Amino acid sequence: MMFSTFNLLVLKCFILYHILHGDGQSLSSSCHSTHRFINFVKHSFNYLNATKISNKLAVRSFDECGIQCVRTSTCLSVNMASSSDDNGVYWCEILASDKYMSSESFKPSPNSHHFSIMTPCIEDPCIGLQTCVPNYNDGSYKCRCRRVGFSGDYCQECDTTNGWRRFSISCYKFFSEVAKWKEAKKRCADIGSILVPIHSANENDFISSLLPDAETTAWIGANDMGTEGNWVWVDRKNWGEYENWSGNNPNGDVRENCALIQSGRWNDVSCGLRRYYVCKTKN
Image 1 (cartoon, helix red, strand yellow):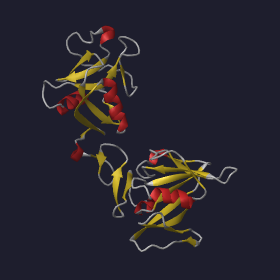
Image 2: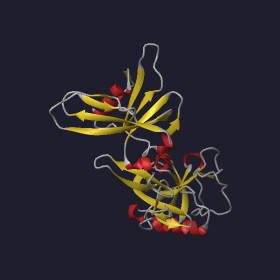
Image 3: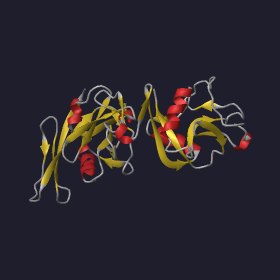
Image 4: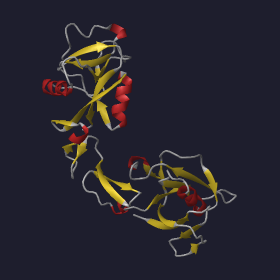
């Protein structure tokens, strides 16, 4: 991994600072107030597509960009143009995340350099399918499984402390908050899972057991929004031979295009109803 470090001594008075570059050259100023060091690591020709605290800033050096970050309490990293414009100006982005918490959004880029705050995570201390999550307050870190719903050193156990339960090779969770079908689908996707599809009687029984009682209904990942009567699962697998509709369902025509489960049986209802839902980890 190619990177260099930039140390900023942030003085808690106005904007006086000290910067130590990788080549040992420094620019400093003094202050009688308390101070602290912030060590930036440069990741050349990379870009983090994360939440921006402000619009792009115009700066003439990393010194200016870095100072804007350390003066902003919610800043965890910055992007900066890899080259200046004709006037010697670079753009600078102050970010509310870092390449560890948003690793999927950290990509190579010929147009920018990324600067993260030095943490133990730079040494890749976590094993298996874990990712390192830094604590910038005390310099510590935690190892978190990349796969949602899993825990353990090798991320092979369901995260039961957060409500996930294992069936076969996947983890499932019943969410006791209501949402419309599309909202439920998005909420599952937002945490790296899917609104649950059901492909066997055993899986159906397991999902039914997650619901607190026989009266509870929950969205499952089936709909016929595309073509009336042509039911599909959100995981795009074939509908297959297994289905467990209640009574004469599905019977809602174009008015009822989404499926829910109750006491192990399925019913087609309006997608605009607000119901509980079940998410499943992606395989």
